[in-house]
Image (cartoon, rainbow, N blue to C red; front, top):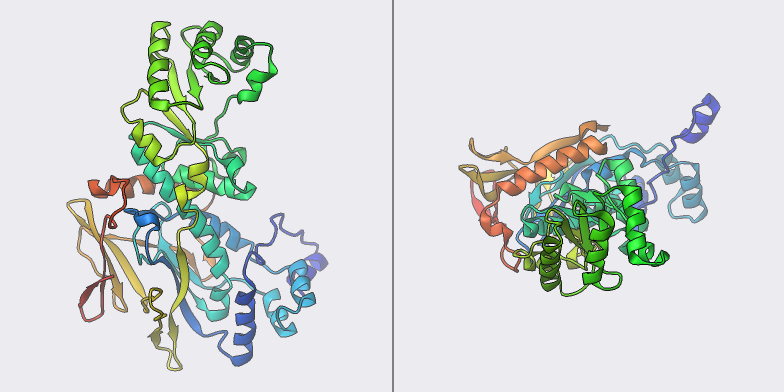
Length: 456
């Protein structure tokens, strides 16, 4: 009898959230099936999630996803529907179906705080559990981390390029409907001010914003009529989209409709550096000296940087941020790095393939700092944690013996991640802000149990 059947017998209502157990790859379960047959399923293991390099030779990455992953882990349960599918399709044996019916992750997970910056070989997440319990989480964890961190890493570069001017995430229509929510969350953690996605606001507490599209203007008999109607509905502080027809006339119509106290205008096309300067001059000439200018025309970090000297007040970014600005996945992998032997001793294990090697052993990472400025990443392998008084330990506990620490999830977890990210970015050296290709902003070093240090 499955847990679902027991719950029905006892009159317990099922959880409203759907199961996440089949958000995985076929071979994860066939490995569990084989491990249950050969007796290795319960062998204690450590899995590690990391990236061998940064996408496009960027200076740093941003680790985002654990808050979402923990919520998905809560619902990683094989209910009757999932078990029936696995049984009907003979993915695994009947014995493994019975084992999956009672699956609950009982291990421990620790890693870098959400919003933390990372570098090649940074051990972002450590999953300690039996082989069977840990291996089935591989696909789920990687799908979350690879996408969310890609978005956050791109968003952080855009925030840096904007140099204090606010950015809004507006890319929901440029990605999958669930990815859109994840992207809005990741961009907010990385420093964006708001999103257009309402579900991200409801589920994660991300501030939402939006006014009107070109269709609103096209709906009305004239542009000025559309603007007057919008102002009447949303107030004079609204932002009017002035490039449906002619921008110069659009600005005149906007000020005519709202007066010189108009909150803002938005430009979504044209040669932006030139267009923005002309619109600023025109607004000032019309007396709308406090009216803000927002631009939203296929921006990425390079386009934003090119507008550094322009009188832009805020940016709206769509396609580029939700696609990781050319790197829609972070290149992260999930590898077994240690297992217990028959004598209950930890044995480091590692993949040795050329170009795809991993480093075995338990890891203890710290951020090296010199008078508060990050100077490197030091990872103790196989020994005790290392570091001096100015070093910052990077690991925190997310799950201990199957119990999720709830401070990391929900809107409160997002707020913590956003605050931590701002701190982590602030302590990086100034060279990390460069947008061009180059070496990682910090070097990563390993130190073994004998005190020997090597470059990762």
